[in-house]
Amino acid sequence: MAARSRRAIIATGFGDHMHKTPQIQASFLTSADSLAGCPVDNLPEVAFAGRSNAGKSSTLNCLTDTRNLARVSKTPGRTQLINFFTTSLGGRLVDLPGYGYAKVSKARRKSWGEAVDDYLQLRENLNAVVLVMDIRRPLQPFDVQMIEWGIATETPLLVLLNKADKLKQGGRVAASRYVDAALADATNASSITFSAKTGLGSAHAIELVSGFLMDPQRL
Image (cartoon, rainbow, N blue to C red):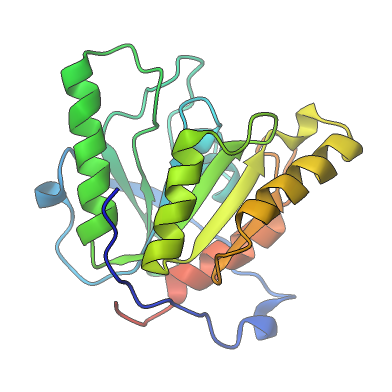
């Protein structure tokens, strides 16, 4: 992905909210197949990215305490558009098409990639990216590409190591250290051991995502 400079966003006064984390209530707003179809305003957005079948839709549902905000399917690649959700915190959650595995034409996969690239490179509303990984298979090529892009553009990046319920504690710790080593050069990135199924790590994730959604700073 081509990188362009982006001023890092740092949430201020965040510690004051440690014991009163805002709940993220969300509802579907609209979908777009290109940057031109995205909402036209200056509301901050937090985009969710990840490989198909990493559990991105389940993660969105977990963080908003809903069952069907984002469609969950056993068939990878169901998210085929950029989906926007309004939230009670003022900003928006954005579900980006998952990378890989989709049973569609190469031309369609190419168009998804172009739409995601345009959104990440050019969308001024973008405050942060949440990168969802399967903790059992972290740092796949797409994940590494996203991390490198985050470092180059200084975009805040939150990595959720999803499906932690599938591993024992030792495996979780090893995977977390492995990912944190890859984030060593990122000054505005962090990772959380997470499970959309059990809610492990969800309180911390909600806290961080809420801070990005409420941040009034513009890029």
